Length: 264
Image (cartoon, rainbow, N blue to C red; front, side, top):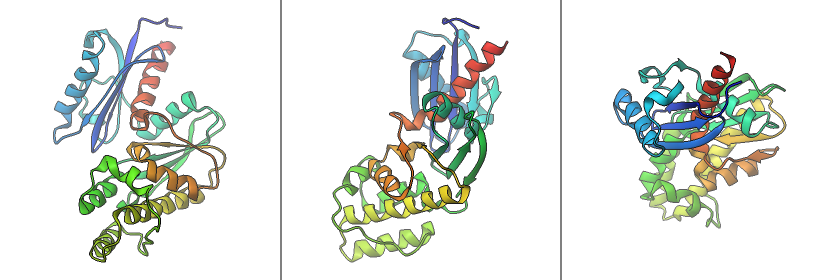
């Protein structure tokens, strides 16, 4: 088994953000998140260098790099590409070994990844055909309401009368939000209703895949405390939330890189 002193990295090239985690063994020494931009190749190099600048470690010191995410193929310096679902499962097994499923709320889709007793991905389900359950949808709603994205979670917690939405499609919900604004409904009540609508979709995915036991919430959507609360209210199972949910796939990729070195 390798000793400390070997560095590995995981890079998650998502559609909205690029994330990097650098490990020494299984310990995090650096991480960085940057907007993905339009050029994945340039962004990958930029976010990787930004993470290394915080450590004093050079690119030549990295023994292995695993890439994941929609833009993984554009990471020219990666040693291996792994699916984001496998990375989420690997991360969950290490950080929350008792969990039986990962709920990943990303920019383009929401996935529920069911795990087996060994923490490996068993099956998954996604709602990518309808955008109303993902992070991009929340960005659109924040824009419509004129509320900074980072503030919609805390603001929704102030709601005293949750607005109910009758549609599940993102386009129709957006139209309903505009109508509620015209009716002078409070922004916090509208946001609480949007979160409740997304939470209902998440709960439906969990039911369809028949996952039981503890679940863990990952992805950028898990940074929204209002959405997290709504999901907890909808789910009939314990829900765990990591401190840095946006980094989970990148961290899982880094764990896989480290696992690979130990097997050599």
